[in-house]
Amino acid sequence: MSTSDNKTRVVVVDDHAFFRDGVARGLTRTGQIEVLAEVGSAREALEVIRREHPAVALVDYQMPDMDGLALVHAVVRDHLPTRVLLLSAFTDSAVVFQALQEGAAGYLSKQSSRDEIVDAVLSVARGNTVLPADLAGGLAGEIRLRGQPSGPTLSEREMEVLRGFARGLSIPQVASELYISASTVKTHTQRLYEKLEVSERAAAVAEAMRRGLLE
Image 1 (spheres, rainbow, N blue to C red):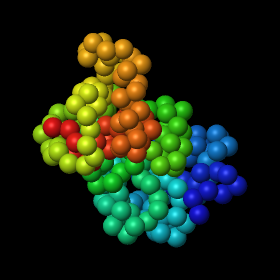
Image 2 (image 1 turned 120 degrees about the vertical axis):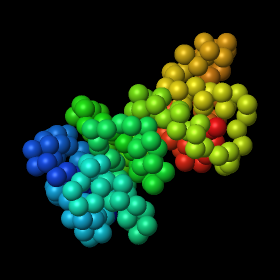
Image 3 (image 1 turned 90 degrees about the horizontal axis):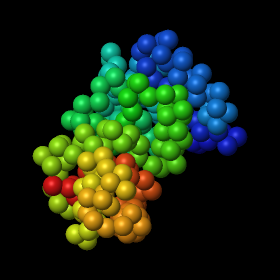
């Protein structure tokens, strides 16, 4: 089960007890999240995930026994229902790209506020991909280097809007750059969401990256 008494069930994974406890307390205080376990290693986390099937595993990218990326790989390989949200002090675009390619549900900086972490956990539990806008812009280079065209067919204008989002632009900024109205950009954005099966800009960039739609 992923929820209990309408609360999102989460396991918090970090080898630093002080940080781990602080994050767990912040999640619990919302009243919307139940922290099933706080563990200090990825191997312990995998045991909890296999046994309890929490909705979300909030995982430090750097762990002493097995890094967060290896945990993502194990969860995906074993077809476990838990979605893994990575937290890291490092936000290098190549690392973020690889994490999403492996199947991570999202990637956040450890500098994120408590509210940002809470919102990300709840969003991931609803099936969304979480990627802060400042990271989305940094992924543009990785997308250009690694992306291969495939997946759903997008119109030329939809691709232009998508490329703008990949560079971290907002809807008004995309509208200004393409010399079209913001409402027109919103229309193209909605079509993008439908084709990529997402509900927000960062998720659209992440999903397009996974499908190799950006060159």
